Amino acid sequence: MVLDLLLIGLAIALDPLPVTGFVLVLSSRKGIWKGLAFILTWLASFVAIIAAVLAMTGGEPPPPRSAPSTAALAAKLAIGVGLVLYAERTRRNIGKRPKSSGFMSRTEQISSWAAAGLALLLQPWGMVAAGAATVVDAELGHAASYAALMGYVLLATSSLLTMELYATFAPRTAHVRLGKLRAWMERHQDKALVSLFLFLGLWLVGKSVYQLTA
Image 1 (spheres, one colour):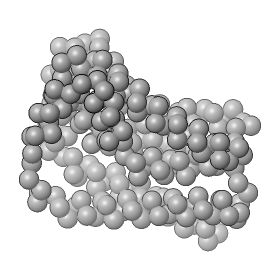
Image 2 (cartoon, helix red, strand yellow; image 1 turned 135 degrees about the horizontal axis):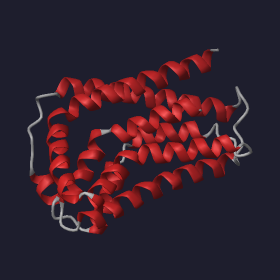
Image 3 (cartoon, rainbow, N blue to C red; image 1 turned 90 degrees about the horizontal axis):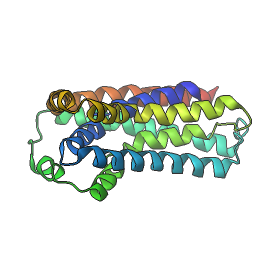
């Protein structure tokens, strides 16, 4: 469970879509407060999903080969296949989709409430679902499970937290460097998505197939 959560959390943290959206939020007027609203909503959704999964399992992982255990593995397998297919579709469309600045211009004038909604819109729900399927194996009787879950949430939010703190304590430098990061992300977004989704998708497929057939 720990390794899976580590990989999923890292992939979420590096996902270029929420990173680019968050940079745009920070670049807006009173971006620090709007960024905080974005992060709090982002964290709240993670906590709510983890709490819902633990409520269903009672904090005890289902026995191996049981129906809930098999269902969780099947869900991870399906999510992995979906990520691989999405990566391939994105790879085929690289360079074909026209660039649009309409969304960016609207984001620069976004409100705090809209920033909170944007956090939900840009959350990579496929990877979040993979994390939820992995949390099924959490055993709350061990402190290590609490540490793994907390580490997963913090790791998935680490890129946003880093940018928020950077913009808070070094606003001038952050404005320049985050602008460069935004430009780089816009140029390489599709390739980064393909790499992230393909790697994570193949990992989930391979491990799920192994556990289902072992």
